[in-house]
Every structure is written in C-alpha cells, then in structure tokens.
Length: 113
Length: 107
Image (cartoon, rainbow over all chains, first blue to last red; front, top):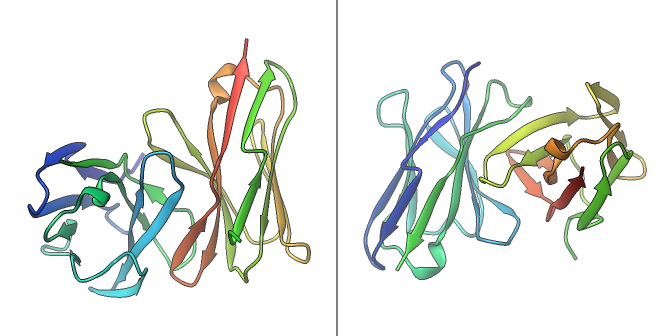
C-alpha cells in the first residue's frame, strides 16, 4: 500500500537552530500539507502546497516557516530559528486530487530545548 | 467557540458495545473526515464524507449537512479499537480539526 514517509521520526534541537523536516508524499499525489500537533492539543493546519506553490497557510505559518519541493519527490518544512513553542509532532499529508482521502505520514516529533 | 466540536471527549466501554462519537461543526465545508490516531501518534484516514453514510467493516459514518452534524459508529467494539478518533472538516485547502475523542475499549 502506498504511504507517506517522514524523516526524521524524532529530532531534538537547541532553541534558535534551523530544522528541516522531510516528507516523501505518495508519488501520484498533487496536493501536500503540513500539520502540527502540540502535545495534548488538537491537530492544527500549517500550510497547503500545490503546483509548486503555497495555496493556503495558517497564521501559525509565519516568516520562520517555509516549504519547498526541491526535487519533485521530497516536500520539506523548514523552521529557520526554532522556539520552545515549536516543540510538536509535525505531520505531512497528501491527496491525489483536490478532494479525496488524505494520507498522513507517521509524523516527525520535534523537541526544542 | 471551536469550529469543530466532538463529544464525548473521553469514552470507556466494554468489548462488544456499540460506540457512537459525535461531531458538530459551525462552518461551511466541502467534506468531513473521520481519522484515527493511535498511541504512537500516527494518523489514519477512516472516512471522507460529503453526504449520507459510509460503512467499512464495523465502522459506520453518517453526516447530516443541514444539521452540520456527523457521527462515527463502531459495532461490536474490540480493544484494538482503542485510539483517539478525530473529526476534521475540509475548508478550501485546509482541514480544521476537532479536539478528538479518546476511546478505550476494555476486554
């Protein structure tokens, strides 16, 4: 069964450091998403990406965040200068068409010290 | 007020019981998703609904667009059904999530 893969599964970093979280969406999917879940809280939308550009972003997704699809397969989320409050589980997801079943990765747990 | 409200927040039941989890939303949507999150954190899509009812094995999901309400039912519940069940609604290019319902099925 096709799956969305995320790396790393867990990253520990110091406050102020840059972090890149990587995702490989399902190969024929066209829409990509990043979500995050702070421990004990609900999942929150960060950004959606289609046709090599951001289609929608939340107010959480400020200038410290960026997304890229550098090589046609990977989809990355970069946090430029991490803060303590960036500690969360980050989920990548993809859909084939604009509507349809969402496929989530297993998540990348980010811990900022 | 949250745009997506789930009830109950926590539910404990005995194996074999019929389970119902409810979701109400206050915004216009293009679809509603039911998701399952296991203790390790991974999220799996169970259903995507825009109208009516869907069934997959022991799971049934219904949606009433006029009332802005959806339910997830589990028949003949089993301890392996223990997880957090999340309702999420599609608004344009994003999902808005409910806070989840933690379900525990005791043997």
